[in-house]
Length: 386
Image (cartoon, rainbow, N blue to C red; front, side):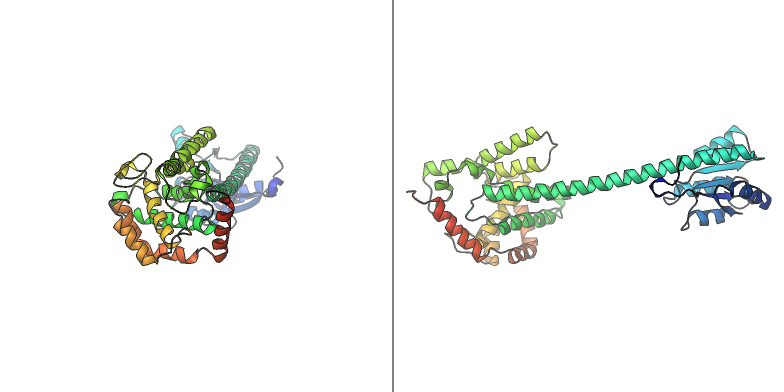
């Protein structure tokens, strides 16, 4: 085997550990023409060398030594992440089966029986160094592959998040949907879910679940693509028939997302959370919402969080036909809805996290350009309509 490939040098290092100076001299003389040789007269010194900046590639380890014997040295080597991959070959005059079994159980790879037979010893050393080289290369390759998988996974996640934001903005009531609106909702969902996890009753809520809720939030209104512009852009009160059409959008969105999840064949995850958000974001805690009239904990938790987040955001950054309200007033309206429109526990978490929610609103406001675009879109979309 060519040991120079993939950055590995031809000159491998062998550490010989023996308390007898004559044995160290003999072994060093046999090995020095082919390998770099280090020697240690004790187990303690062997551990220092092995744990140093230039560790050996193979250790030839005497068993019968005063103080710390070879078995203990091997045990300590294999217990350390820095040295566990160094192969250990025992040098011993002990040939009983139970002695060899003990050595193998501790992680040794081979035995050389004293007195040493030079040709056999050199052949064994060569074999174990080749095996060590192959194992090192495989570990490095696996580490590279793992890093590459992680990098590509991050790229896929970033792409998914961008697509979710784009689809959410297209699906929403576009004259009032801005990038900052999407980002505010996502960040507020994350803050609110994290706060709710501190409630003992919701301690089982996983961080990954909160993250999925935040990432899926922009898709909750995707069913609006099935509602005509004249209805979803209406500035006044909707009539009974128009209202019935508008209220189909949760079912439309949930159906589309359920079909997408089924086609993808992916495990439960982002699309399933998005489906629950789409289906239940207009449900009320007291059962007065739509489309299914769900009540209490029958409403998915993600939808209960989104109901509070959306209500607050629509008060602070309202549609064109309503005036904005300050944070304090919006907070009071949210608190007043506890037990009727909103889950009381979620409202309590919102109150606890209100300063973080306020900071998000201040950091990501809608701009004058957003306002002008919203007016232009309404005028264009409703031109010629009664």
